[in-house]
Amino acid sequence: MLAGMAKDDAPAGSRVDEAKAVLDRNWTGVSTIPAGGLYPHQWNWDTGFIAVGRSWFEQERAEAELLHLFEGQWADGRVPHIVFNPRVPADAYFPGADVWRSDEVAAAPSAVRTSGITQPPVHAATALAMLVHAEDRSRARGFLDELFPHLVAQHRYLKEHRREPGGLAWIVHPWESGLDNSPAWDEALNAIEIPGGALPPYRRRDLATSDARDRPSDRDYDRFVYLLTLYRDGGYDDARMRERSPLVVEDPMFNGIWARSAWALAEIARMTGEDGDEFAEDAKAIATALQERLWDDRASRFFPLDLVSGSHMNHHSIVSFLPLTSPDLDPKVARRAAEALRNFRHCSDPVCRLAPSYDELEGGYDRRRYWRGPVWANTNWLLAHGCDFHGHPTVARELRDTIVRFVDALGFREYYDPHGEAGYGAHDFSWTAALYLDVVLGREAGLFDRRGLSGGSS
Ligand code: 2M8
Image (cartoon, rainbow, N blue to C red):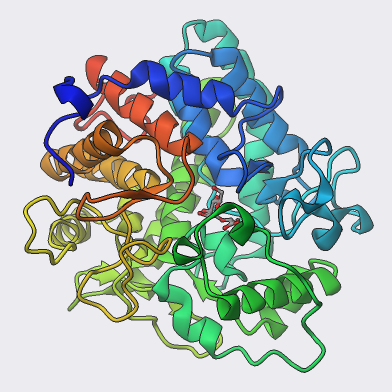
């Protein structure tokens, strides 16, 4: 059971050196893997979180790993969700490079093999945070100059290839949401009829390295693989996928993070002497579209929109609150969302913490299966920045406290039981270590509480 303090009653936040050691163990020479065994390659949004934490103590490596991710960027601007490490055996992860076959697509890079879907665009805000943490600020500014065109291309990919006329970006795979197995996607996933012969034979690799109780069901996995093959066999053509995919969703979290990213791009443009108006306007437009299309006034939260059925997906998952990361959200809407977030646990247990990935009172909740109930460091961390920005420091503090208390008591796990009874998933999980570092060191440096998304940006 989670006690108030760390192991052996050490003071809160005393595992900073261990957190750095986790990141160093997971460093491959060019990037940081999420965790040994289960995730042996470079992941997209993981890199964004990892670089924030790493930049507190290893500026050069943090820059290198972000640049390495962008070596996998396609000519159309998409940043793939995985950049494969060629030194890792082909069967170490499924679906691997041979399944995605980026080398058969003209727009994909030739130097590295990648997946073809994307993940939430956290990287522009990461780059801003890295500037704040940098020991060598002139080097950090040079890095921003180098990264800026890549970030612009990432933004324009979403705008030109993934944007619905209503103003929000859609995703075509639960893996693009980052919250792969969330009950939020159940209905849409369950509605998918896989045509006979359309599913290639495959063997799951995740179950070889982790407990089946933590991972998605075989039925869900079939649908993950089917959606992948559909996109791949259509040459990763977005217009075609928008028309034919049985899963096309406007996700509040993806779009909230996109809005934050556009806002951060405008800030970076200002610092690097570029014109940032386009991005500032886009950030506002995405926030407006979030409110118009996904805000549910009665429930005081945002619900995803299923563009195939035309209905909102009214499940009580954490994605409903992530638009708080958008700086341009109407303050009244932000206040109501922050209040609803605080009541989100529905848990009588006093150690029950903010913020589970799914509401405990809802069908589909599972306190240990990934994204179906457990608490994750990254969603708490994103929400904390959003709550600070919108003037809700108490909720922000509670969210950050949860990260520190869970890690202090249970180690650097991939995710945690919301009642604090256990950690689950991978051990030595990189983004947990990185975000713990950011919270503990950011607090020591006095960065939080109404200082803005990156903890202060110039
Ligand atoms: C999980 O997703 C991957 C597929 O991308 C998997 O289950 O194999 C998710 O938690 C995702 O958000 C994360 O980026 C990835 C690596 O940590 O693992």
